[in-house]
Amino acid sequence: MAVVGDIHANFGALEAVLRDATDVEDIWCLGDIVGYGPEPAACLERVARQCSITLLGNHDAAVVGTLSLSTFNGAAKEAAQWTRGQLDQSAMLFLRSLAPVHHRRPVSLVHGSLRDPLWEYLLSDEAACATFTRMPGHLCLVGHTHVPLWVEEDRSGVALSRAIENGVPRELPARRIIVNPGSVGQPRDRDPRAAYGVLVLDGVRPVSFEHRRVPYDIGSTQARMHAIGLPEELISRLSVGR
Image (tube, one colour):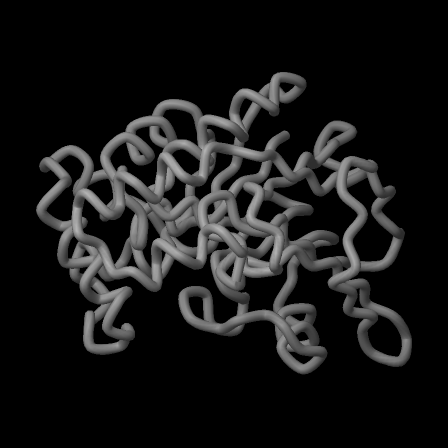
């Protein structure tokens, strides 16, 4: 099971991930398919065709108008407004059909957190504890932060780690866990390579999770963004992963 999220209309990064994930039978998407990047329609078409579960992200919600653009910064707002003009009716209907949370016991999927599915950045012990209290099962997969994360629940609270070893399957512990696979299209952990994860299930029981990084042609994506006239800050950050 490949787990992708925060694609952000970066089709080059998405294609690189899908080429790498040849050993999976299914794909789950944690939302923010659009926003920031230059190829929203192509990314939506591919996700709609290949992902069996797809969540709504905050940028997706902004594009279809269920979330006000006033809540976004200038660059994100400008990209969302441009994106609206690139999508046909079927793409907009697909986005409107999505929800930010999906429970498939014993796994929950959410774009932000179970406390605030669209907006909360799950980066602290307190935010992790709030999601643990709302988890109906063993594992919760989250996106939104663009940072790979591994959080285990223990007797004293949580053990939150951003020190991720890529390319090595990690056995899921008996205690409950939250995992963020990182961002496909706009990583923010100072590694510009596209990030995703592979979840192994034994029936419905989650067994292991592997974080993966994949290089892609960043310059080509940046050139398309320049041609469109998207904000420079969105273009330059792709090179440094922040």
